Image (cartoon, rainbow, N blue to C red; front, top):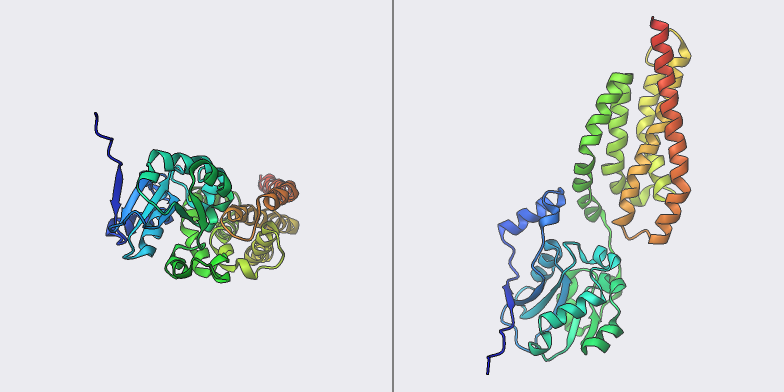
Length: 332
């Protein structure tokens, strides 16, 4: 009679190496972000016994590392789902951190043969993708939702009761600043191109105004997010864009005598129409990475503001091109 096939259990530790830290830095800057994946499967942290707790996470490196480092010297199992390298929160929304994958991973890893507790501790942010009753029905495993942040797990495990603070999403200044590098990398090339184009079309002031409008949407907006008035991200971004471009608009309007005064007025108005819209449009990127929005709310905001943004931006561009054309014709 053939011997039963050995259950494949990976080994891991709670200590992060220099390579892990370097991977985290690269991920924050959008470098090799899609490759930062952990092999899905069952991992042994320390020397777990059959009664050891089982934690579930995504196969995104930063999610896995945050969990194992938070558990410290604990002996435990970590069940890593195949979320295609996406973090728990986003994967739950996309369905990859979901009921089907969890049930499949339990079966593939033969978890019933490894542990006796039959309890899975999932991150709270994974709840939208997992139907706990369906998992219990299909596998027999109960699901318990731990705190939002892995760093709160040691305190949570003392009583298996989460405090209100553990259930609340914190999005402080440090969290918001963390989002800036990857967003900055994404707009770097368009930012340079836009600045060069504006320099040759309108000169130094419009070029600087364009660069600052884009930079404001990427870097200044997340820092000032809680203090900007209005509720919608689009209007928040538009207000910020108005503030950062206003000095350049005034400088363009009063920078000296022009052959025809309204040419400068036209260019100044064009900047003030189009550039705040650019800032507002970029700020929509943050609707998917903050706890202040919902899917339906974002959809409603996009349908409400995008046509207005397009109209203002198009009007500003046409006005600028008209002013440049009239000026060039007058120089002939």
